[in-house]
Length: 66
Image (cartoon, rainbow, N blue to C red; front, side):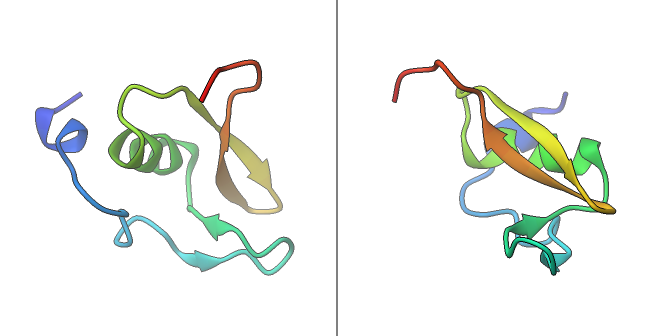
């Protein structure tokens, strides 16, 4: 992974497609883009990409402390 992704500051709006029509969360076209956005927004935290219809969302892994 490149350093530019890890040092990204701010929400990666260029990776999102918009709001999900089913649940209203920010949606991503692919799992890879969702993971890339999570690493940029929350460096060091563990998140996973979850599918929702034809899009993907970011979800924090359960059992992890704040």
